[in-house]
Image (cartoon, rainbow, N blue to C red; front, side, top):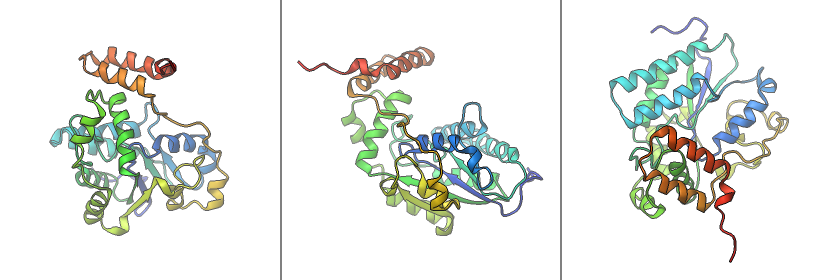
Amino acid sequence: MAPHASISTGRRLILHLGVQKTGSTALHHMLGRNGAALADRLTVLTPTKGSVTRDLGRAATRFSLTPNAKTRTALAETARQLRDQLADGTTPVLISHENLPGAMLGNGGTNTLYPHLETIVTVLTDAFAPMDCDFVLYTRDMADWKHSVYGQAVRSDRYGKPLADFLAETAGCGTWDDLCQRLIGHLGAERVRIFRVEDETDPTRPGSQLLRHAGLTADDIAALKPQRARSNPALNAGALEFLRLLNTLGLERPARRRVADLVTAQHSLFVSEPA
């Protein structure tokens, strides 16, 4: 497919690959609150409800779980659809979705760090041509990250085993350094930026390292409306264990989703009162 006429050769595109549980949801909320303030400096696409950006993350996950010609073609077609939605302009484009690197640990038997990442970034680079793509990825302390990912896998991906089993299954998942070297080896160091969540200095303005990479100044970022409430907070231990046990019952997805939504909304009910 030929590039859409509105796409300028060399227009900068930053693809934020997440990863999951590194503050992407909080970043998206903050960017949504500041869309008007950013419009003349940065075109932002996040996975809002009904958006092609959301579809793109889902397509990347489906490909990583079932990597075949059909899912690869669907990923490429969704990326081109998103590319063709871009209006004329020269401002940098930021596309952010935590699922772009593929399924996280615990989803569909995934037990290594993003095994199809290289293929996914190749598909995205080709689909968004002739834009000048670079890729950003956040990391987080591995032990802390795995505990958070376990909670998300139980909550969203129907993972049904205890934490000890999850940690045993993912003990050989690889390191962030390994993942970064894979990405750099595939794309070249000039097209990859790796940031640590621990180096974010202002929790009310998440993603500051990414935004500086996208061209915003420190003053630009300081002027953004802050993200005050924590996004996507973790469930307490009682609620998480209830959902884990629910995941073992084999409920149909719609029924399971309704119960999970209720537990998430009322998870304070699962806190044990002191004896």
